[in-house]
Length: 133
Image 1 (cartoon, rainbow, N blue to C red):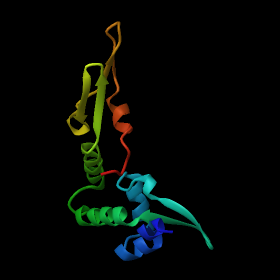
Image 2 (image 1 turned 45 degrees about the vertical axis):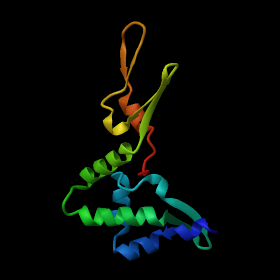
Image 3 (image 1 turned 90 degrees about the vertical axis):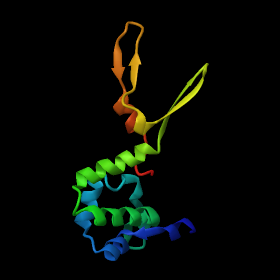
């Protein structure tokens, strides 16, 4: 398969970068590696995990380059911010369409007829696909 050529197995990834299984899954738990990059495929010996090679290799190299300078939680926040930086929220009205970079949005609030305010900022941010940058 053509798409299989762009994948790297978990075993090969760990070997290439000299990282442990535990480190890889700790990075996943902290949000450094998006869950949807873990692709499980059936093999003759059972199931094996693969990753999109270009994405995972770039991310692992970045983690390894910065892990001694920045806490993993800080790096996860920075990566998440970069993903949001490329996302837009678009408001479409009868008067036209207005786009805002998510990085520039401080809050998103719904206001009802009675004046009540509902902050939906976090809900909107959670809709941004993880790992897309």
